[in-house]
Image (tube, rainbow, N blue to C red; front, side, top):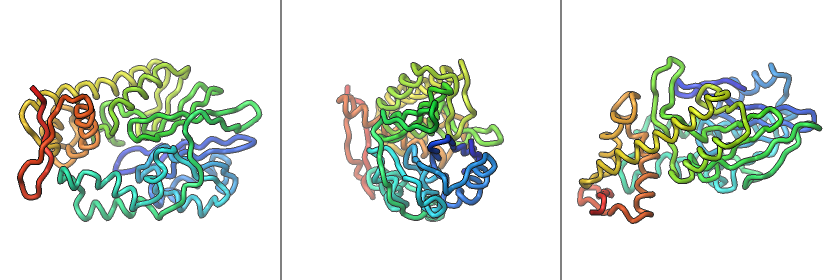
Length: 314
């Protein structure tokens, strides 16, 4: 596990080194290859020029931002991601348009200029994705060590993980989030940021039934034994509470921004105010789910600029 930091939160990346092949799972932010990935890799006895695979679990600046720098140090490595995430993993322009700035037009939720600039800087330079995985592929790391690529959608459509049956472990990236992201100081920093509710719940169920004794995520302490089931249950409970509170809140017409600000204090103890707007990822997924089920009406509120508002159907 290669240990770094992003926004005061742990950033834990996985490096698997075998006799035949090796995998670096995620590349951190733009400067993380030099700041901690390569130094800690060398401490573990590895070298960038020997990496076989660089895999992005999903498109986020702290998971794909170092792609370009890592490819400079490891040009022979094949850069891969989930098939459904290829376009978003290609660089800062796609990340900004399809992820971080996706809620501007319809919801007027977006980052200020300074934060936007930070996001673009940390997202690194564009880098071509050379291969994609759909799940089920196997990679031989050593003669007796074969790992399996698994799909863990919810935080993104193409989110990947690595199932390591030899060590009864799943390296899951940001597949599930519990109820909160904590900082190094133990304080709550921000809410879960899953996007696709039904896929996320399916991933929780999938992880619960895997034959593993260790679960390694990127921003949470390593889970062992019964802690895995507890983390899965905590992740599901947050989804259920968010869905319940949102349905109650939408008995009257409200915008997504209003829902984030109103429900944030009910769902967690992170710093309230702008951080509550990070709920837009999850709550947008919940309203999309309600729309698909025909349970909510969607209208434009006649304001300047116009924004979408939602209300539960009678």
